[in-house]
Image 1 (cartoon, rainbow, N blue to C red):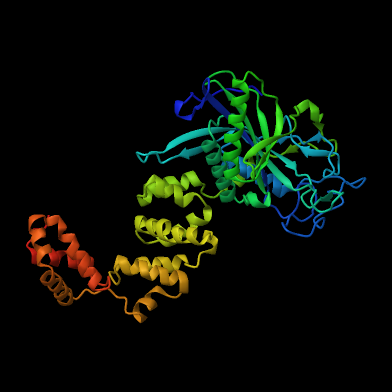
Image 2 (image 1 turned 90 degrees about the vertical axis):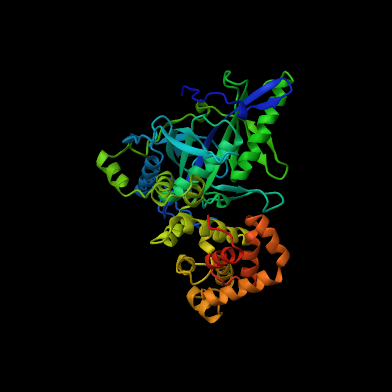
Length: 501
């Protein structure tokens, strides 16, 4: 592969060193477990959390005479992902044997794809921001390829004092290895890339993106160079299973390499591991090159071929993806780019918002979902799937505000009640006497009492009319937030002789 540098050096991403500025260059190889009921070449289950070595067929265990049979659903999922990445779909691809020897690899090789992958070049657009001016920076990251391969098993070294155990439940599970071009120039970009990629596969339903379960993990290739100079020697940080750890690993590794180079040393091409407890990378082994794996076409598998009609049928049923959904929210609902970005970050959040916004004011729905619902969930450590407030309940609260049955302040109290106790918002308002006071006479009485009790404040307002808001606040306080705010404001201004603007 010829590496083409498509990025213009950007001083705000430079890393200052003792001898001048440096630029980090990052490429990522993300392993995403295909969402399918069975493995890539066998009918064994892929259910997570089953007892060790219970999801294992004779094929997965590499018993003599067992032959792999391709899982069509895994092929479809790879093509769907390629389409979601706006990538070239290759109608003909080849499975190869990647030879290496490890206790959790029963065959002594991994079935993968080398020169002829199922998906070719594509792209992901990431957004960084907002900056101090509220602006976002869109950056295009190239995708080199996506290929299908089988996962290895898992070696467990902490189960016995003198022996290691092997669990083959993951052996043969279908993975999509999504390889970026070396277009990433900071840890923030890398985290944004991983976040966006995970969002895309979740929208597509091709991978669940659960990094804590190992169904999505990244190998991060890091090198440093003088800004705009020749590419440096890269080190690969293996199996990073957290977006936060990806950022930490890059920051440490870039500094480590800069330190070596500034001391006159050279960088060894090697594979490293990130230790999240120490916040540092450590050497694992010398980095292998392709020839070390002795790739050759798997003799048990014919080339994988399909026609354009197969691809078109899959493309016709793709869901609306995050970028398209964000653009629609901004265009049709008048949302800000920031609000739209928050709402499309997870498919479940976007679905929830659309259910709330249906037939209602989009901006108002967005404010309630982002500020109140997501804020409350964040405080309690819950995901949107665990929300105690349904879209119907939140929508009902918004309807009560629009109907002027309750004020905005009362709505906040009502939301807390629904969040903690549940129930129908309209019934709660009725049962607890939370309706907004719209009786002008009652409001006027409250205004008169506040004005009469605060002659000094009245004098200040005469000199500075903008202080009238103090009276509005006092009236709202005296009525328990039930008075109609617009009516209060109008009456206060009338009583104090302040002209309407």
